[in-house]
Length: 440
Image (cartoon, rainbow, N blue to C red; front, side, top):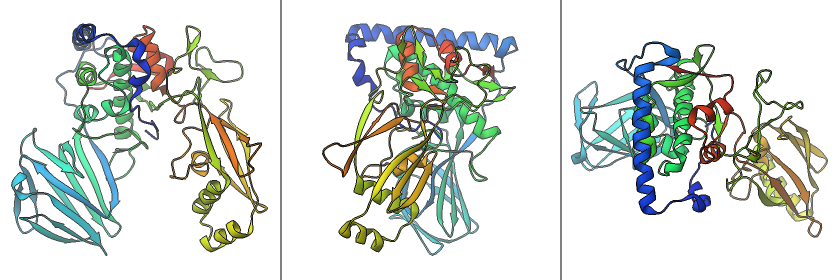
């Protein structure tokens, strides 16, 4: 998710043990979920958007998803029949050709398996078409359906999967939100509509590139093809078919994130936000409690050594490694100062004062400047800094939330679902200026 969603909700169910029913009760809840989603689908079919006629027979659009960009090497295999049409011949590819390994060097791509070998010179476009809807390709061991495009340039290979948007969502929702807990159903339905809206925004309003509409990572939405499914999401996608959030009759930019920490990042148009505090801050609060309080990222503390910050600055500002090595050996001064905060309290800019020179980082680079030794950025920009009283080489970063804080808080949506709110109430809370509409 840009968006987007920056942290995956990998195992949030671990924090909800007190809400888990026994196996028999869970089975009953799953039946309730299936019945609920079935009735929800029927009501959508009969009513359509804003009371207009439903268009269930209309075809969902295809979307082009970038799986990797400027790649130098990778693997490719096929389950079922795929067709590759080249100038010299038409090739039928299936399991029998084995796994292709490809690499790019100096604008030349070599694509080789036990039974096939291709050598191609940039620029070149390869299009792999499935014979049946059930056919799959495996890119770096992850299965996908639909068409596969390989765009070869001097910089590498850009891998694009073209797939129907509803099938695309089946590969997004289980990655973005836990989809096997019946208690989360309303949150999963809300996530499905928000994700479809975001995809339609990229498709129709602001595509990421001429080659593709959307990326398959945190910069847009996590998409892993057919690698994972969820009981709730597999029902929620068809049940909400074509339903999106719109703003002025256009697909809305329905951003979302993992955890807001209790304070949402208000959009630029805040005049009509209900419950907006006088200070311009929107609180993720219902029934007297922060909605995302059960998130493992609700509050956090991270430790940073001064030398780690030095190496971050070196990387981001491209400081010569010889110079940095000399500083480490002979001594240097480094201080981190928070320069600006947004109304929500999130840090908008920090200055790293290094040997008398100020290096200012703003926006998303704030989190990268304060990354850990493994290069992982801070979970969010919602933090303050405490210097260690005992060790001048160490600092504590005390923060809240995960992600940019804009749009829907995913853990907040789960919290609202556990409090009994339905998906329409959840969406209305996080996207108060948007309307539910039927796109197809």
